[in-house]
Length: 275
Image (cartoon, rainbow, N blue to C red):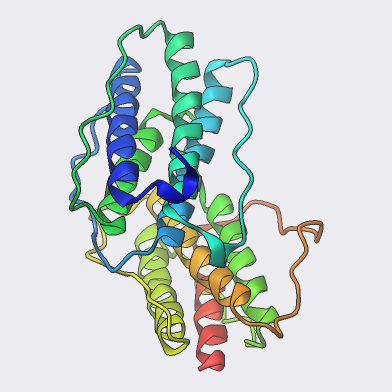
């Protein structure tokens, strides 16, 4: 099937296969199930699904490294954010599945799930909700789950995109003893502001409601990547935006949830400055 022929129902089917395979790995490793309810997602576009699929690819790559898979598989080349289509989502999920199959082989799991039948009424929001579940399964399987430092780097990249759009704001004051739930709530506010700006530009944007109970850093990382996707899209559709180069140095170092919360509050102020 050609890339342009792939539609959300195809992505939903392969995402469900990925979910079954990720669950099998989590069970093989003896890890407990994440029984928390998922967020309520509406109005998602393929670009937002793509960024969640990228998260799944990164988590699968980390898990492959942890259990000793000899060589990781490269991700498919990313198109311009404003050119993302369901076919690109499908490619990323298939690439993640290839890593999952390498992990299964390493663990001696011989059973393989079949891709379920296509459900023609499935929309991008359904694919995104399934990938959230996939990412929770993968997070449970990791020896080294994603940390506030990983989240901080993602939010810093989102902040850099907004600064190139002219969204300037002073760094918010540092508040001690913040927890992942505080960071999640703050990033929800950032996502809502970014979505409002996207809508003002005549484009569609998603809505995410109902934060999970007992928020973990991995949940915050997933949400931070949705925020990153929206501001990257805003950057792509703004002709006069200053470029953000891949070779620019990234922030590093150990970060606490309080640092993530501080930067997320700063990002919200930057987005507010954009109007």
